[in-house]
Image (cartoon, rainbow over all chains, first blue to last red; front, side, top):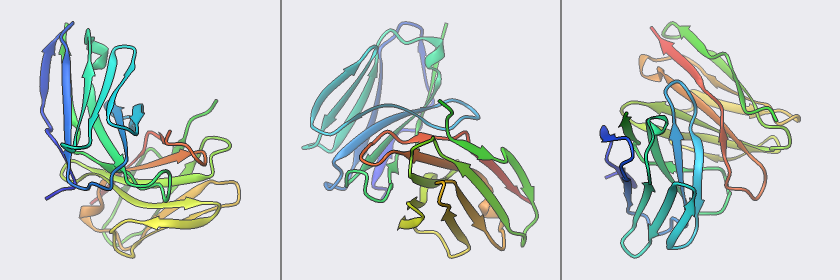
Length: 113
Length: 112
């Protein structure tokens, strides 16, 4: 079983929809949680990171962490065609020690005009 | 501010050959990590360097190696290439104390 599970999709939604992307994890030592967006032929781009359980908002994006359930989510409001990309969750047990992030498989999102 | 630069962007190599990939981090970033991305396994951590020292290593065979220079630029080397080494190799850099890993666009390696 992988340490981080993420539904690979693909997920297709109409423009303006609310998108929910999720990851579950098994290692309770994970303390830091990140969401990356990866466009085709590009490297991953950091969207948000959070440490504690609860919600963190940045524009149209909201990251949610539930450590008791080992479950994290990324919500995208008013989705746009430019949001079409692969979204990767990533986790780390120790703050910036050794640079190792554990990634989910990524969810491919398509937002249709 | 320049991003993380990886060269070359594309490579085609034959089984048994070796290859060297290069990564120039963002100016001021001293931590450089390398990842392998494949459709089947996703992103997998290879190793991380900080101030020319390898601090962490993933579960890859010894054919995969790396180094970091005094200017923080890093190289990774894969010897005796196998077909299964075909992947996108990504480099990421960050400043000390930051979770903000910035990735390069990667080097697409194809082994034939």
